[in-house]
Length: 220
Image (cartoon, rainbow, N blue to C red; front, side, top):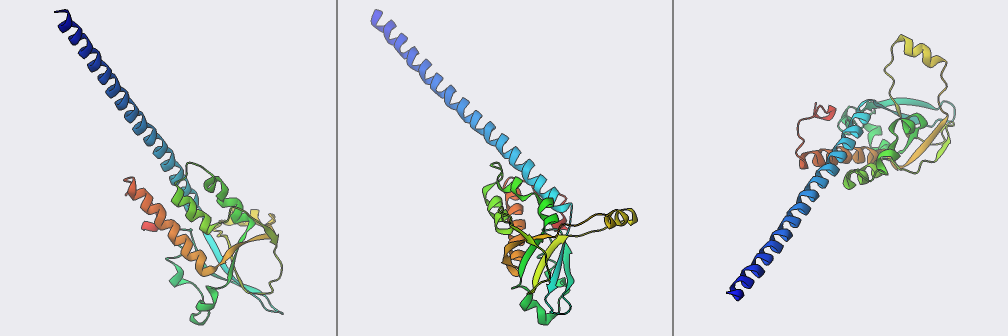
């Protein structure tokens, strides 16, 4: 009789222990899922902020031609970062020049550098790694500024596009623009390709987490 009671008691302890292990396992799984969803929510907030910031202004792309007597610039494209590659076919460059222009080096104005605040995204540990890598392929996080002078070679300059009303134009007349620019360390063709790859990577990540219906300019 005593042996039976001891057996039942031991069995109860084993069952209780197993239930404790199962309860602990379930708690850890629930915590892991909750933690993952919290991280993913923060990632989504950051990616959506990146998209919003990049869609709030357009780039103005100018072909700066070297000429010993009359250096000059020609606006060849404008649009937000996600639309540039798609609008390349509408570029205001003659067919004879197009193959040459894709090999010209790309420079950013200091106004663009200050506007995009790229380091805030590249160095943020929450940013999805693949998107961060694509950002690095477009914009270097090590900016080296140089004086903007009369060119001794042809290059492509990326500036902020200005869509201004009369009041803003008057304000700009008394505002001095930075004389500094920074090399992107790539040619124009690579720049357009990298911006397109960034758009694709962001789109893929959004679809992966089930976000498919957003007000994105590149979907219009």
